Length: 380
Image (cartoon, rainbow, N blue to C red; front, side):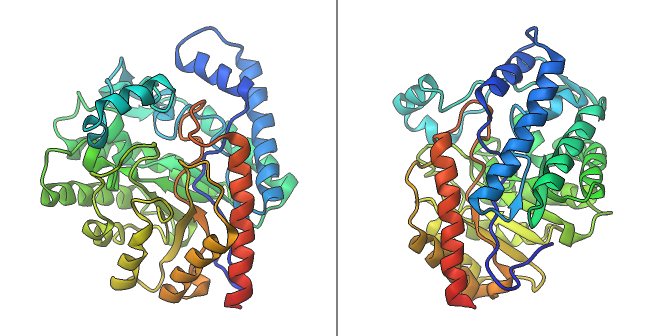
Protein backbone atom coordinates (compact mmCIF):
# COMPACT_ATOMS: atom_id res chain seq x y z
CA UNK A 1 0.00 0.00 0.00
CA UNK A 2 1.32 3.41 -0.95
CA UNK A 3 1.48 5.86 1.95
CA UNK A 4 2.11 9.59 1.97
CA UNK A 5 5.88 9.50 2.43
CA UNK A 6 6.82 13.00 1.32
CA UNK A 7 3.45 14.50 0.37
CA UNK A 8 -0.25 13.77 0.74
CA UNK A 9 -1.29 11.31 -1.95
CA UNK A 10 -4.66 11.62 -3.66
CA UNK A 11 -7.25 9.02 -4.62
CA UNK A 12 -11.04 8.61 -4.74
CA UNK A 13 -13.59 5.84 -4.22
CA UNK A 14 -13.72 4.30 -7.68
CA UNK A 15 -16.62 5.02 -10.00
CA UNK A 16 -16.36 7.94 -12.42
CA UNK A 17 -18.66 9.33 -15.15
CA UNK A 18 -19.02 7.01 -18.11
CA UNK A 19 -19.22 8.22 -21.73
CA UNK A 20 -22.73 8.49 -23.18
CA UNK A 21 -22.23 5.75 -25.79
CA UNK A 22 -20.98 3.37 -23.12
CA UNK A 23 -23.98 4.11 -20.90
CA UNK A 24 -26.37 3.23 -23.73
CA UNK A 25 -24.66 -0.11 -24.32
CA UNK A 26 -24.55 -0.96 -20.61
CA UNK A 27 -28.23 -0.12 -20.23
CA UNK A 28 -29.15 -2.34 -23.16
CA UNK A 29 -27.11 -5.17 -21.69
CA UNK A 30 -28.68 -4.73 -18.25
CA UNK A 31 -32.22 -4.65 -19.66
CA UNK A 32 -31.72 -7.75 -21.79
CA UNK A 33 -32.08 -5.78 -25.02
CA UNK A 34 -30.10 -6.47 -28.23
CA UNK A 35 -26.65 -4.88 -28.32
CA UNK A 36 -23.35 -5.32 -30.14
CA UNK A 37 -21.03 -7.29 -27.84
CA UNK A 38 -17.92 -6.37 -29.81
CA UNK A 39 -18.88 -2.70 -29.74
CA UNK A 40 -19.42 -2.86 -25.97
CA UNK A 41 -16.04 -4.53 -25.40
CA UNK A 42 -14.27 -1.93 -27.55
CA UNK A 43 -16.10 0.93 -25.86
CA UNK A 44 -15.17 -0.35 -22.39
CA UNK A 45 -11.52 -0.72 -23.40
CA UNK A 46 -11.36 2.82 -24.81
CA UNK A 47 -13.25 4.26 -21.84
CA UNK A 48 -10.88 2.69 -19.32
CA UNK A 49 -7.86 4.07 -21.18
CA UNK A 50 -9.44 7.50 -21.29
CA UNK A 51 -10.54 7.65 -17.66
CA UNK A 52 -7.14 6.54 -16.35
CA UNK A 53 -5.46 9.25 -18.40
CA UNK A 54 -7.93 11.89 -17.16
CA UNK A 55 -7.33 10.93 -13.52
CA UNK A 56 -3.59 11.22 -14.02
CA UNK A 57 -3.96 14.63 -15.65
CA UNK A 58 -6.23 15.79 -12.80
CA UNK A 59 -3.51 15.02 -10.26
CA UNK A 60 -4.87 11.76 -8.83
CA UNK A 61 -2.10 9.47 -7.59
CA UNK A 62 -3.98 6.20 -6.98
CA UNK A 63 -6.33 5.69 -9.91
CA UNK A 64 -9.13 3.25 -10.75
CA UNK A 65 -10.67 1.93 -13.95
CA UNK A 66 -13.67 4.16 -13.19
CA UNK A 67 -15.84 1.00 -13.03
CA UNK A 68 -16.46 1.54 -16.73
CA UNK A 69 -17.64 -2.02 -17.37
CA UNK A 70 -20.18 -2.08 -14.53
CA UNK A 71 -23.80 -0.97 -14.51
CA UNK A 72 -23.41 -0.41 -10.76
CA UNK A 73 -20.88 -1.16 -8.05
CA UNK A 74 -22.95 -4.07 -6.71
CA UNK A 75 -25.42 -5.49 -9.26
CA UNK A 76 -22.64 -6.12 -11.78
CA UNK A 77 -22.20 -9.49 -10.07
CA UNK A 78 -25.42 -10.83 -11.55
CA UNK A 79 -23.69 -11.31 -14.90
CA UNK A 80 -20.70 -13.01 -13.29
CA UNK A 81 -22.33 -15.29 -10.73
CA UNK A 82 -25.06 -17.93 -10.88
CA UNK A 83 -28.01 -17.98 -8.49
CA UNK A 84 -29.59 -14.59 -9.32
CA UNK A 85 -32.80 -14.06 -11.28
CA UNK A 86 -35.96 -12.03 -11.48
CA UNK A 87 -36.45 -8.71 -9.79
CA UNK A 88 -35.98 -8.30 -6.06
CA UNK A 89 -37.65 -4.92 -5.80
CA UNK A 90 -36.17 -1.84 -4.28
CA UNK A 91 -35.61 -1.20 -0.60
CA UNK A 92 -36.33 2.47 -0.04
CA UNK A 93 -33.99 4.20 2.42
CA UNK A 94 -35.75 5.05 5.65
CA UNK A 95 -34.82 8.74 5.43
CA UNK A 96 -36.63 9.14 2.09
CA UNK A 97 -39.82 7.58 3.48
CA UNK A 98 -40.12 10.58 5.81
CA UNK A 99 -40.25 12.90 2.78
CA UNK A 100 -42.47 11.18 0.15
CA UNK A 101 -42.85 14.22 -2.10
CA UNK A 102 -39.09 14.65 -2.28
CA UNK A 103 -38.64 10.91 -2.87
CA UNK A 104 -41.02 11.11 -5.84
CA UNK A 105 -39.21 14.13 -7.26
CA UNK A 106 -35.85 12.37 -6.84
CA UNK A 107 -37.15 9.39 -8.80
CA UNK A 108 -38.63 11.58 -11.56
CA UNK A 109 -35.38 13.46 -12.09
CA UNK A 110 -33.24 10.32 -12.29
CA UNK A 111 -31.62 10.86 -8.91
CA UNK A 112 -33.01 7.54 -7.72
CA UNK A 113 -32.12 4.95 -10.39
CA UNK A 114 -34.42 2.02 -11.06
CA UNK A 115 -31.84 -0.55 -12.12
CA UNK A 116 -32.64 -4.26 -11.99
CA UNK A 117 -31.79 -5.85 -8.67
CA UNK A 118 -32.36 -9.61 -9.03
CA UNK A 119 -33.01 -11.96 -6.12
CA UNK A 120 -30.82 -14.84 -5.01
CA UNK A 121 -32.90 -17.87 -6.00
CA UNK A 122 -30.25 -20.60 -6.21
CA UNK A 123 -26.69 -21.57 -5.27
CA UNK A 124 -24.18 -18.77 -5.81
CA UNK A 125 -21.20 -19.78 -7.93
CA UNK A 126 -18.80 -18.25 -10.47
CA UNK A 127 -20.34 -18.49 -13.94
CA UNK A 128 -18.14 -16.32 -16.14
CA UNK A 129 -14.55 -15.35 -15.40
CA UNK A 130 -14.02 -13.76 -18.82
CA UNK A 131 -15.59 -10.44 -17.77
CA UNK A 132 -13.23 -10.15 -14.81
CA UNK A 133 -10.26 -11.08 -16.99
CA UNK A 134 -11.26 -8.40 -19.50
CA UNK A 135 -11.48 -5.81 -16.71
CA UNK A 136 -8.01 -6.73 -15.48
CA UNK A 137 -6.50 -6.66 -18.98
CA UNK A 138 -8.10 -3.31 -19.86
CA UNK A 139 -6.94 -1.72 -16.64
CA UNK A 140 -3.42 -3.13 -16.94
CA UNK A 141 -3.05 -1.70 -20.45
CA UNK A 142 -4.28 1.72 -19.30
CA UNK A 143 -2.05 1.78 -16.21
CA UNK A 144 1.01 0.68 -18.17
CA UNK A 145 0.39 3.45 -20.68
CA UNK A 146 -0.14 6.18 -18.07
CA UNK A 147 2.17 5.11 -15.22
CA UNK A 148 0.27 6.55 -12.22
CA UNK A 149 1.72 6.23 -8.72
CA UNK A 150 -0.68 3.40 -7.93
CA UNK A 151 -3.86 1.67 -9.11
CA UNK A 152 -6.84 0.03 -7.41
CA UNK A 153 -9.88 -1.92 -8.56
CA UNK A 154 -13.13 -2.01 -6.62
CA UNK A 155 -15.26 -5.08 -5.89
CA UNK A 156 -18.49 -5.59 -3.98
CA UNK A 157 -18.38 -6.98 -0.46
CA UNK A 158 -20.43 -10.02 0.57
CA UNK A 159 -22.47 -7.75 2.84
CA UNK A 160 -23.47 -5.18 0.23
CA UNK A 161 -24.61 -7.88 -2.19
CA UNK A 162 -26.74 -9.34 0.60
CA UNK A 163 -28.26 -5.91 1.28
CA UNK A 164 -29.27 -5.16 -2.31
CA UNK A 165 -29.88 -8.62 -3.80
CA UNK A 166 -32.44 -10.26 -1.56
CA UNK A 167 -31.88 -13.82 -0.35
CA UNK A 168 -34.66 -16.27 -1.21
CA UNK A 169 -32.57 -19.42 -1.29
CA UNK A 170 -30.21 -19.79 1.66
CA UNK A 171 -31.65 -20.71 5.09
CA UNK A 172 -30.25 -17.62 6.82
CA UNK A 173 -28.50 -14.31 6.27
CA UNK A 174 -25.35 -15.88 7.70
CA UNK A 175 -25.46 -18.77 5.21
CA UNK A 176 -25.96 -16.33 2.34
CA UNK A 177 -22.97 -14.26 3.47
CA UNK A 178 -20.80 -17.37 3.72
CA UNK A 179 -21.73 -18.49 0.21
CA UNK A 180 -20.94 -15.05 -1.18
CA UNK A 181 -17.63 -14.94 0.66
CA UNK A 182 -16.63 -18.29 -0.81
CA UNK A 183 -17.25 -17.23 -4.40
CA UNK A 184 -15.98 -13.64 -4.13
CA UNK A 185 -12.62 -14.84 -2.82
CA UNK A 186 -11.60 -15.70 -6.40
CA UNK A 187 -12.34 -12.18 -7.67
CA UNK A 188 -10.51 -10.52 -4.79
CA UNK A 189 -7.41 -12.65 -5.22
CA UNK A 190 -7.41 -12.16 -8.99
CA UNK A 191 -7.37 -8.37 -8.61
CA UNK A 192 -4.41 -8.48 -6.25
CA UNK A 193 -2.71 -11.14 -8.35
CA UNK A 194 -2.89 -8.79 -11.33
CA UNK A 195 -0.83 -6.24 -9.40
CA UNK A 196 -3.60 -3.87 -8.31
CA UNK A 197 -4.77 -2.80 -4.89
CA UNK A 198 -8.14 -4.34 -4.01
CA UNK A 199 -10.85 -1.97 -2.80
CA UNK A 200 -13.82 -3.67 -1.17
CA UNK A 201 -16.99 -1.58 -1.15
CA UNK A 202 -18.82 -1.96 2.16
CA UNK A 203 -21.75 0.47 2.43
CA UNK A 204 -23.55 -2.39 4.16
CA UNK A 205 -21.63 -1.51 7.32
CA UNK A 206 -23.34 1.91 7.50
CA UNK A 207 -26.04 2.32 4.84
CA UNK A 208 -27.30 -1.18 5.59
CA UNK A 209 -28.74 0.19 8.83
CA UNK A 210 -31.40 2.36 7.12
CA UNK A 211 -31.89 0.06 4.11
CA UNK A 212 -32.16 -3.57 5.26
CA UNK A 213 -32.05 -3.33 9.06
CA UNK A 214 -34.11 -0.18 9.67
CA UNK A 215 -36.46 -1.96 12.09
CA UNK A 216 -33.75 -3.60 14.18
CA UNK A 217 -32.08 -2.08 17.24
CA UNK A 218 -28.58 -0.66 17.08
CA UNK A 219 -27.35 -3.73 18.98
CA UNK A 220 -28.96 -6.05 16.43
CA UNK A 221 -27.50 -4.08 13.53
CA UNK A 222 -24.06 -4.16 15.13
CA UNK A 223 -24.38 -7.94 15.35
CA UNK A 224 -25.21 -8.17 11.65
CA UNK A 225 -22.38 -5.80 10.74
CA UNK A 226 -19.97 -7.96 12.71
CA UNK A 227 -21.13 -11.02 10.72
CA UNK A 228 -20.50 -9.10 7.50
CA UNK A 229 -16.98 -8.24 8.65
CA UNK A 230 -16.38 -11.90 9.45
CA UNK A 231 -17.45 -12.85 5.92
CA UNK A 232 -15.18 -10.20 4.42
CA UNK A 233 -12.22 -11.28 6.52
CA UNK A 234 -12.80 -14.90 5.52
CA UNK A 235 -12.95 -13.99 1.82
CA UNK A 236 -9.68 -12.02 2.05
CA UNK A 237 -7.75 -14.39 4.30
CA UNK A 238 -5.08 -15.02 1.66
CA UNK A 239 -4.48 -11.35 0.81
CA UNK A 240 -2.02 -9.18 2.77
CA UNK A 241 -3.85 -6.31 4.53
CA UNK A 242 -1.56 -3.73 2.95
CA UNK A 243 -2.82 -4.75 -0.50
CA UNK A 244 -6.43 -3.84 0.41
CA UNK A 245 -8.65 -0.81 0.91
CA UNK A 246 -12.18 -0.79 2.32
CA UNK A 247 -14.82 1.85 1.63
CA UNK A 248 -17.60 2.55 4.14
CA UNK A 249 -20.48 4.93 3.41
CA UNK A 250 -24.09 5.80 4.21
CA UNK A 251 -25.36 5.83 0.62
CA UNK A 252 -24.36 7.97 -2.33
CA UNK A 253 -27.70 9.67 -2.93
CA UNK A 254 -28.89 13.22 -2.40
CA UNK A 255 -31.24 12.58 0.51
CA UNK A 256 -31.76 13.96 4.02
CA UNK A 257 -29.72 11.16 5.65
CA UNK A 258 -31.16 11.94 9.09
CA UNK A 259 -31.47 8.21 9.81
CA UNK A 260 -27.76 7.51 9.14
CA UNK A 261 -26.26 5.52 11.98
CA UNK A 262 -23.52 7.57 13.70
CA UNK A 263 -19.95 6.53 12.93
CA UNK A 264 -19.33 6.29 16.66
CA UNK A 265 -21.79 3.37 16.86
CA UNK A 266 -19.95 1.25 14.30
CA UNK A 267 -16.32 2.41 14.21
CA UNK A 268 -15.04 -0.40 16.42
CA UNK A 269 -16.57 -3.00 14.09
CA UNK A 270 -15.18 -1.24 11.01
CA UNK A 271 -11.71 -1.35 12.51
CA UNK A 272 -11.88 -5.16 12.80
CA UNK A 273 -11.73 -5.55 9.02
CA UNK A 274 -8.47 -6.87 7.56
CA UNK A 275 -7.88 -4.17 4.89
CA UNK A 276 -5.20 -1.74 6.02
CA UNK A 277 -6.69 1.34 4.38
CA UNK A 278 -10.11 2.77 5.27
CA UNK A 279 -12.03 5.17 3.03
CA UNK A 280 -15.04 6.94 4.57
CA UNK A 281 -17.28 9.98 4.29
CA UNK A 282 -15.79 13.12 5.78
CA UNK A 283 -16.99 16.05 3.68
CA UNK A 284 -20.78 16.06 3.48
CA UNK A 285 -22.99 17.96 5.97
CA UNK A 286 -24.13 14.81 7.79
CA UNK A 287 -20.70 13.33 8.51
CA UNK A 288 -18.08 16.07 8.24
CA UNK A 289 -18.09 16.53 12.03
CA UNK A 290 -17.18 12.89 12.64
CA UNK A 291 -13.45 13.53 12.27
CA UNK A 292 -13.74 13.90 16.04
CA UNK A 293 -14.67 10.22 16.31
CA UNK A 294 -11.31 9.24 14.82
CA UNK A 295 -9.62 11.54 17.30
CA UNK A 296 -11.36 9.82 20.21
CA UNK A 297 -10.98 6.13 19.30
CA UNK A 298 -7.98 3.84 19.41
CA UNK A 299 -6.87 3.39 15.80
CA UNK A 300 -4.51 0.45 15.20
CA UNK A 301 -1.04 1.63 14.25
CA UNK A 302 -1.13 -0.11 10.87
CA UNK A 303 -4.33 1.55 9.64
CA UNK A 304 -4.23 4.23 6.93
CA UNK A 305 -7.12 6.73 6.75
CA UNK A 306 -8.59 8.14 3.54
CA UNK A 307 -11.26 10.64 4.58
CA UNK A 308 -13.57 12.06 1.99
CA UNK A 309 -12.47 15.68 1.68
CA UNK A 310 -14.72 16.40 -1.32
CA UNK A 311 -18.42 15.51 -1.60
CA UNK A 312 -19.76 13.14 -4.22
CA UNK A 313 -23.38 14.40 -4.24
CA UNK A 314 -22.81 18.16 -4.40
CA UNK A 315 -21.98 20.28 -7.44
CA UNK A 316 -20.16 22.75 -5.25
CA UNK A 317 -16.44 22.66 -6.04
CA UNK A 318 -14.68 22.66 -2.69
CA UNK A 319 -12.07 25.34 -2.13
CA UNK A 320 -8.55 23.89 -1.95
CA UNK A 321 -8.02 25.66 1.39
CA UNK A 322 -10.98 23.78 2.89
CA UNK A 323 -9.67 20.52 1.46
CA UNK A 324 -6.24 21.18 2.98
CA UNK A 325 -7.84 22.00 6.33
CA UNK A 326 -9.70 18.70 6.34
CA UNK A 327 -6.56 16.76 5.45
CA UNK A 328 -4.58 18.45 8.22
CA UNK A 329 -7.19 17.49 10.84
CA UNK A 330 -6.59 13.82 10.14
CA UNK A 331 -2.82 14.24 9.89
CA UNK A 332 -2.92 15.62 13.43
CA UNK A 333 -4.68 12.42 14.57
CA UNK A 334 -2.66 9.62 12.93
CA UNK A 335 0.32 11.41 11.39
CA UNK A 336 0.81 12.72 7.88
CA UNK A 337 2.15 9.45 6.46
CA UNK A 338 -1.07 7.62 7.33
CA UNK A 339 -3.46 9.99 5.56
CA UNK A 340 -4.48 10.11 1.89
CA UNK A 341 -7.00 12.54 0.41
CA UNK A 342 -10.14 11.02 -1.08
CA UNK A 343 -13.80 11.53 -1.93
CA UNK A 344 -16.90 10.68 0.08
CA UNK A 345 -18.07 8.10 -2.44
CA UNK A 346 -17.97 7.28 -6.14
CA UNK A 347 -19.00 9.91 -8.67
CA UNK A 348 -21.04 7.53 -10.82
CA UNK A 349 -22.29 4.79 -8.51
CA UNK A 350 -24.88 3.81 -11.13
CA UNK A 351 -24.17 4.15 -14.84
CA UNK A 352 -26.01 7.15 -16.23
CA UNK A 353 -27.14 8.60 -12.90
CA UNK A 354 -24.34 10.85 -11.65
CA UNK A 355 -25.47 13.28 -8.91
CA UNK A 356 -22.54 15.51 -9.87
CA UNK A 357 -22.21 16.86 -13.41
CA UNK A 358 -19.38 14.99 -15.17
CA UNK A 359 -17.41 18.13 -15.99
CA UNK A 360 -17.76 19.33 -12.41
CA UNK A 361 -16.53 15.93 -11.20
CA UNK A 362 -13.19 16.52 -12.90
CA UNK A 363 -13.00 20.07 -11.52
CA UNK A 364 -13.59 18.68 -8.03
CA UNK A 365 -10.81 16.13 -8.47
CA UNK A 366 -8.47 18.89 -9.60
CA UNK A 367 -9.41 20.85 -6.47
CA UNK A 368 -8.67 17.72 -4.43
CA UNK A 369 -5.16 17.57 -5.89
CA UNK A 370 -4.61 21.28 -5.25
CA UNK A 371 -5.81 20.96 -1.65
CA UNK A 372 -3.45 18.03 -1.11
CA UNK A 373 -0.58 20.14 -2.44
CA UNK A 374 -1.42 22.93 0.01
CA UNK A 375 -1.62 20.50 2.91
CA UNK A 376 1.69 18.92 1.89
CA UNK A 377 3.42 22.30 1.91
CA UNK A 378 2.31 22.81 5.50
CA UNK A 379 2.88 19.26 6.74
CA UNK A 380 6.38 18.75 5.28
